[in-house]
Image (cartoon, rainbow, N blue to C red; front, side):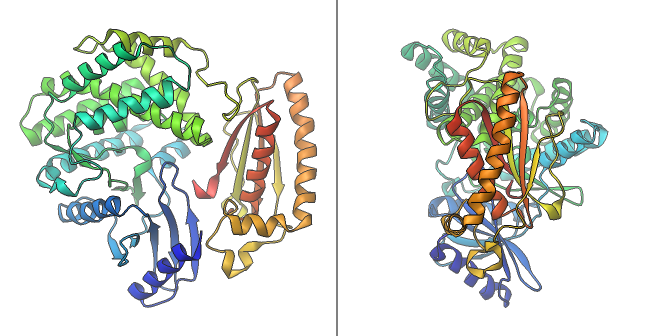
Length: 478
């Protein structure tokens, strides 16, 4: 990142903690334009953030203070720069609820009693967050004070333009708009006086010694409690079994109705309509971030989101008629591969998927989630290391200074050319034999510079070939 962004972060750290920052490790933010670093000094560490959107920052600052005052486990806000664009907050570690659940599944534990109890604790916390936050000053909310008709229609239009249109699913613009209006009016008949967290999902829940902490609430506003429950239970990548969803919903309703003295039927009458709008909002994000911005993580979520949508259509009848929207969604679910066929998008003309990843040897070798085993692991530690130089430590292999550093080293090109020769032979053979998966991983000391650069370059070369689908991940940054 440019020095004008990183230098104020370092200065703020030294001013607040009274010691210099010895290490600045760039962190990823999959669906956000915010930039994050882990800053480490001799005695302290924290998460530093930069966001040019001051209004969004002010919402985060207000909610951080207000929620902590109400006993909610959110990160402590340490310091804010005068420009209100740079700030320091508590470091809650690296373990999200999503990663915790993912690791357990890899170990063959599945969604067991321990996972169920943890989710129940999260839903108990959610009921308290929603009710305790009813008295917040929502004039601080961003971009709107309430999840109102404008907010709902934004989400529905997001789905229409960034998913339906990109996937070439046919629809009648006027009839679809009429159903959007009908759905919006129905949703707003629910009790909309609660704190709506907006993005309450497993990736925004951190675990410290088994206790959940909550992040990424800057989009909170006033709205219906059903939305956040739908966000957690129907998150695509969490992929909860339907029986577990129903048990968790029952647990939440016991907590929520006790706190609000309301009736279960009042909540459930609107619940699956909020599930629908949340799924459509998420699919719009997957289309924009995945197909348009070419971020593979979001592409991986599309089949799971479609599975949730099919389950909703097959098992739950909404209390309002949405004839055209329902038909469009049925058509979408019946499409075998709703991936747009455009030159700037991920190709889908082959059954072979190549998973490209970067990792740190300090954290162990990467797992093969395909179940096929094998693949390539290339050691980048013999290449020139920009991480040895202070001016590159705040960057990764996706940032221009590091890219230029490695491009100028002829031994890096020689290394990648040898890699391409080996991978090319496997891809040709795998396509002929109709194999479905190949993994290629690059490792280096910290998983930040050389391995990331090599993974990015190989993924770009593979995309340009057009004979495989590419899934790119940077393990130590995700």
